[in-house]
Image 1 (cartoon, chains in turn yellow, brown):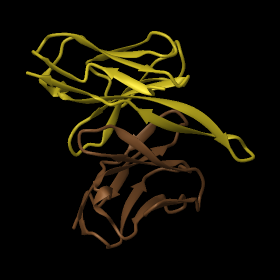
Image 2 (cartoon, chains in turn red, orange):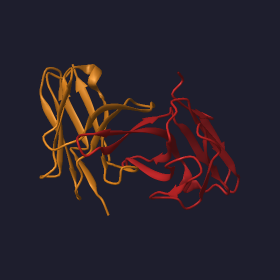
Image 3 (cartoon, rainbow over the protein chains, first blue to last red):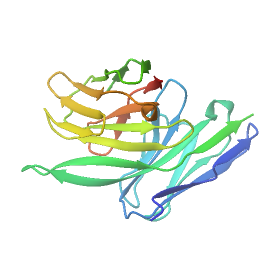
Length: 120
Length: 110
């Protein structure tokens, strides 16, 4: 069980270049997420996919696009990279559980190893 | 807009000492998560807190949730060097999205 995997681990781009970050999970999770992590800012959600076939914007979607290729894979594309997109990118997937009499849901997320992207 | 604030952001402590990290959030939620991140690594799930008064313990770490005060705490007992890491709390208000705090960078000195 590999969990959540991401490729590549490191990438250097020049301003204006494009690239796709790949993410896959083998835990049969329905939901997948893309975050970026910048110093002093925690993790910020870029896009997420609650289930196969759906995607939604998060907190910082500008400059990014996503594709939920199938249940296992969720890719993040930078069409024209900018220095402000220099960051560490994490993919996550989650299993929804329910608890209590009311069956309220919860959403524990599991993270991939990250991609360190530098845009020059 | 949901705000999640952790304090302190930086914590340097001696081995054997106790300390508490605080996570305050600005809107109603009864689901909160704690994660640990080692330098250069990914995030690892530590605790899932799902109701008011929930308390979870693992080794020297204990997490609690007070939904009325919109506050979670992560208490460290008799710290050891291996606990050095960055700790994040994350609040779940929609069932599908988490909002993370800035993280608390903990350094435990011998």
